[in-house]
Amino acid sequence: MKSEPKPPFREQHQQRPGLERNLDPQPRWRASRYRSAGKLEGKVALITGGDSGIGRAVAFLFAREGADVAINYLPEEQPDADEIRRAIEALGRRCLLLAGDLQRPSVPAQLIERTISEFGRLDILVPNAAYQTRKDSAAEVTDAELDRTFRTNVYSYYRLVRAALPHLKPGAAIIATSSVTGIFGSKQLPDYSGTKGAINAFSKALSMELSERGIRVNVVAPGPVWTPLNPADAGLPPDKVARFGEQSPLGRPAQPEELAPAYVFLASDADSSYITGIVLPVMGGDTTGG
Ligand code: NAD
Ligand code: MG
Image (cartoon, rainbow, N blue to C red):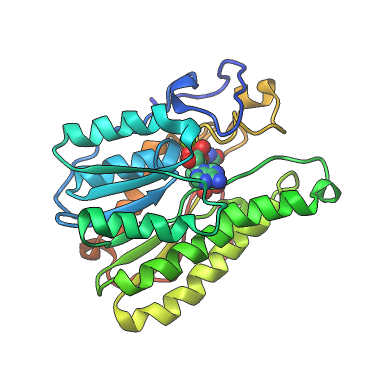
């Protein structure tokens, strides 16, 4: 744990959505100390935002546990997507790359259909893509911005679930990515925090409906993680990026490889068959009530 990189980092900024290959230091996603145990053998997962950051680390660990993986990302992120595909194929697993903008209402259903036609099944759905831009005030959130944040983070999740439900069998799992901001709120991210609260409540409601079908629905709520998301946030200046995660009790951001095992845990029936409807904090020491 102590060997993971600590701030200050180099001052840096990227155009949204950002590329993992341009981050310094490079995020750690291979989880070299993790030992796999075939927990997801024969399963198929679809991960949005799987090209980089947390989604990439999850895709890689799912593949190491025996799953084939479909990944959605934006066309600008092709180099990142190619890199994780190569890494997954080197494990002898299959990786289906599906570029497409989740803001478009038709895209989520297309992702599900392409996954089914390629792999013949879907066992694990990970709605993980997100959009965020920091503001100085909630008054700056225009209708267009509110639409963009909610369409990307919330509407796409609903639409993925609607399209996936006919295909999910008992033993399937949905694991959404929320955030510490969905629990505590964040002054600079009012719209984004709202989407993360919505993800938490929607997931709990869905878990109630799907428990009788043997499908579990859970959420992971990360604290700060070293990924392209924040360096590519137009509202976060390069000197703040250099100090990203410093305020966390552990004094540093998480690396993506420190998030991915939580998704394996929630995806694996051997590990979490009695767990549904939870929001699992992976927040580096920030505690919650209850
Ligand atoms: P990331 O930039 O690597 O991943 C986000 C992904 O979202 C991008 O790779 C992109 O493919 C996808 N995306 C964004 N807009 C899209 C669109 N319109 N259509 C399709 N895909 C789109 O960053 P990350 O930090 O790994 O983010 C993954 C999840 O983790 C997000 O839900 C984010 O809110 C959450 N999260 C991140 C942090 C953090 O500090 N990095 C903290 C809490 C929660
Ligand atoms: Mg990306």
